[in-house]
Amino acid sequence: MSLVTYILRRLLLMVLVLFGVTLVTFTLTHVVPVNPVLALVGDRAPQDVVDRVYHELGLDKPLPVQYVLYVRGLLHGELGVSIADQRPVAEDLARYLPATIELSTAAILVAILVGIPTGIVSAVYRNRWPDHLARVFALGGVSLPVFYTALLGLAIFYVALGWLPGPGQLSPYVTPPPRVTGMVVVDALLTGRWKAFWDGLYHLIMPATVLGWSSAGIIARMVRSSLLEVLNTDYVRTAWAKGLSGRAVVLRHALRNALIPTVTVIGLTYGSLLQGAVLTETIFAWPGVGRYATLSVISIDVPAVLGVTLVAALIYSFVNLVVDIVYAYLDPRIRYR
Amino acid sequence: MSGRPATAAPGHEQPAPASAERRRVWRALRGNALAMTGLLIIAFFAFLAVFGPYLAPYSPTEPDLDHILQPPGGAHLLGTDDTGMDILSRVLFGARIDFLSALLIVAVSMALGTAIGTVAGWLGGFWDDVLMRMTDMFLAFPSLILAMAIAAVLKPSLTNALLAISVTYWPVYARLARGQILSLKEREFVEAARAVGLGGARIVLRHVLPNAFAPVLIQATLDMGAVLLIAAGLSFIGFGAQPPTPEWGRMVSDGRSYLQTQWWISTFPAIAILLLALGFNFLGDALRDLFDPRSGR
Image 1 (spheres, rainbow over the protein chains, first blue to last red):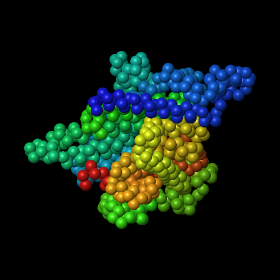
Image 2: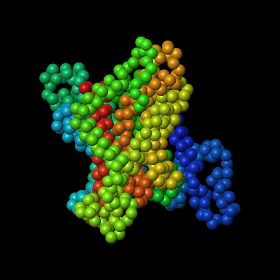
Image 3: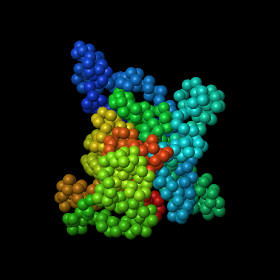
């Protein structure tokens, strides 16, 4: 199978899956015990108003028709209107998503910078004390409840020591850069606002480290096992036999191939950082989708919650797709399976 | 686990008998410090889950306004919270809630996922396609976010949280079980069972499934840690256990505004979560190493 056919096949599959996803969210909107009409007009509205809104929302049509209308709306980017702030959910998401992407990207960078070296140490010193230490460190990260580490990080490094800034994306005295991408650090860089750039970066350190540590363990684990596998192969033995130094064998020959499966794990972890964002954004007062989702659930803002769910599933599927394509590109064997 | 098939036809070819395999794994585990540490931690919390409520010195849900915010030590070994509830008692009761929640979620997902994956793998063709596309559909949701959506649509409660997380975890088992069944289906012992005239259901239940179980169990061990964190996280943001339920994630959240001054309210339940998750991850990691042919034992 050529790479192009493979990509087309996977794209088709993704469309199919996304259809299924809309079925799930559509079902969820219809099991809501809250009457969406009363939620909009209030429960003291006269009956004819209720009936009109009922009709306007298309709720008097049969379910299959409603589903078709729902999907048609989605295809036009309509995710409904938020009950809490009375604005289109799509608009809200466009406003909050960049902050989450910025945080997740910073977190995955931390995870890669910590995870890959930890995995290498583990594999090279297999079953000796540096390996044990590295594994406990990595598994410890995976086992940490991020919501507590976030609170603890703020209590220690912000309140007690004052080494790192508190919640938020920027200090109150720093003027935010004009919005280009919506990511503060990137916007500051693009518009040359150096003060905002450094301040934004400074504010990213703690949330990114808290989120990144938990993912570093997953990456370290993958690097360890794939590096161990590669170190056992003939070509690595040949490299040793040629008299290359340990550093050259591991870093230049073995690591390259060991990183292929690691790419997959990094991609999947990146997708799942959304969940960590949900747990920590509220604590760090980070204006992203995670905080938006939490606030929406609290105010039983069903259109907003389902909008987040749908977009999360879309991002998740898209990241998976990209990961599979990159993998197929790096390792052609995968396409013949 | 039902163990090895009991009725082996003469000349019936078996993969390594389950009991011998189990002995081999146990021997390897015993020599593995990481696995034994994990097992010990899990056993400790399992003990607390069963006997914790009998060991607790105070009620886990009754406020005692004369003894609020007591530091650890003395009559309250781990201190008290802002309503005077004893942290030790709450952590002990919480062991039952948190351990059992994780166990329930994983058990339900495992049962559902394995059943669907087995049917898909065994029948193949049309049903395989339908069931696996359905699996992909649920796999597309990040579990915490779908769980939040379900919590928003229904009512936030521990039961709904457990249900919601289970809904998002079964696809992993469906895929795993299907893969196992597909590879086992072609083995000689299945053909032999067919040749002696056994029915499909019987072959699957008594001969194929017991042999597909090892990877499923490893996945379950690893998932226990992750599920524990998700369930506690869901309660932390308020969409799981409701106060005054002594659930660990909820307790961390209850003490968050006191972290500067009365650190013990959040910290002890957080340590409990960390330790139990660590136990499962230690054991799961060691098990995976043991069964992973790539780690080059």
